[in-house]
Image (cartoon, rainbow, N blue to C red):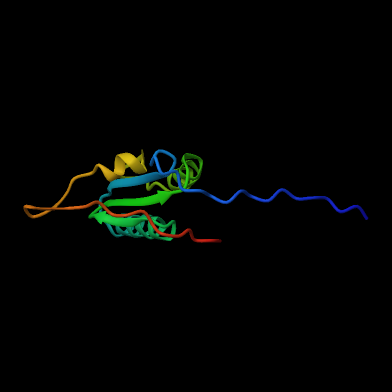
Length: 122
């Protein structure tokens, strides 16, 4: 039996410029006027949470991605689960662009959220 060498995945490195890491936003306005529409809304929201998204505001969720390619993979999963009614927008921005976001609580300005400190391994 011949042993074959397997390629090891390179460890992800943080790009200090902030242009390698990405943030994926999911912004949606889904109707909840009928029971089935409420179920679709709930399923979609639970999918976002299971994919690592965090709520920034009502109906605005964001997820940190280690690269654009990883973000595209998550984006395709979300696209396949978009409900039949309402509106969903997906937006990907660099970590650098995300850090320039102005966040206000009332009249007080606060810094934007920090990227996660470690990756989840599956």
